[in-house]
Length: 147
Image (cartoon, rainbow, N blue to C red; front, side):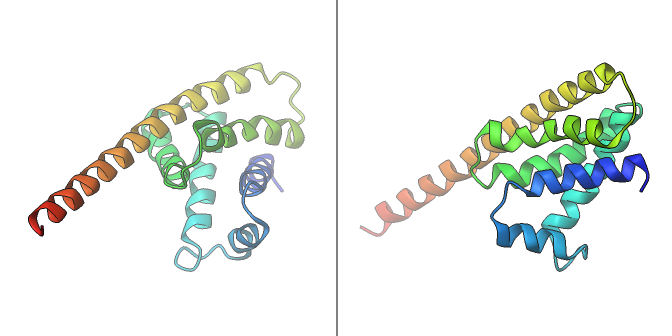
């Protein structure tokens, strides 16, 4: 397995390891986009992030990949630490699957990625809060109208 593939696989396994065992099994068992959309999206987005961590750190490629990952986690009502913490699993995956001695540049890139992920998480949570506020306002208006 190439180093990039090994890093991706390690990062993916560590990320889904945070879910309940039955969810982990589902996420591992199928790479089909329709039967396992969360697993498919997570793996696809992590693959882009691995490429960018080793490449140019192109924000135009990183932003949608981070959005796909963090949006899933933001709607699960996870804390910011839980939602974003998986980004740091990239460091662990690199150390385990690379023979490079100096990883300081990679560590800097992961930190940059984590900061970008925090911005995405904050925006997602604000959207969720706004939707819940509109929903609550609509329900209150409906109740007043039917009294």
